[in-house]
Image 1 (spheres, helix red, strand yellow):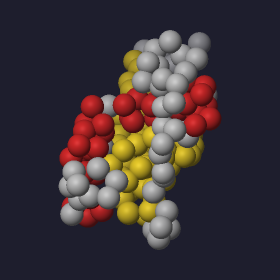
Image 2: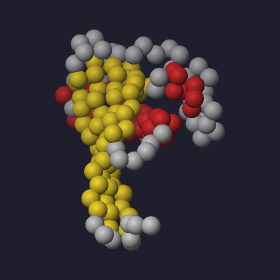
Image 3: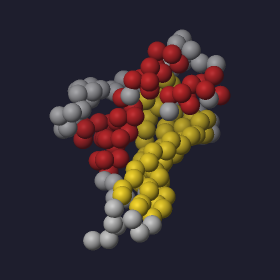
Length: 149
C-alpha cells in the first residue's frame, strides 16, 4: 500500500516539508462472503495505519494516517494496542478521508476451495471532494479436504 501511495500522482510532488496531510480512515465496509465483526475490521485498519511503511510516509511525504476518535477509544481497551495512549490524535486536523471495502470471490469444487479477498482503499481530498488515490490489495486463503460436514 505504501509503495502504491508513493508511486501515485497525488503524492508525486510531496516531500517532508510539504503542508501536512492527515488522512482519517473513516469507513470500513465488509462486502465479503465471510462474517467480519466491526472490531475485526477496525483492528485491521489499525494494523494498516501502524505498519512501518505507512508510518514512514510521515517522514517522506508529510502524510499521516489516523483512526476516528471513537474507534481509538475502543482500541485503548485492547492490551495489544499500545499505540493508542491517552491524547492520541488530539491535535489532528483531518485533510483527507479514506474508506476501505473488503470483498471476496470463492471458487469451490468437491474437495478444494479457494477464497480470494481484497480490500479497496479510496483516498478523498476534503478540500475538493475528489478521489486522489484508489487501489486494491489482494490476499488469498485456501482450504483442502471435504467441504461438507
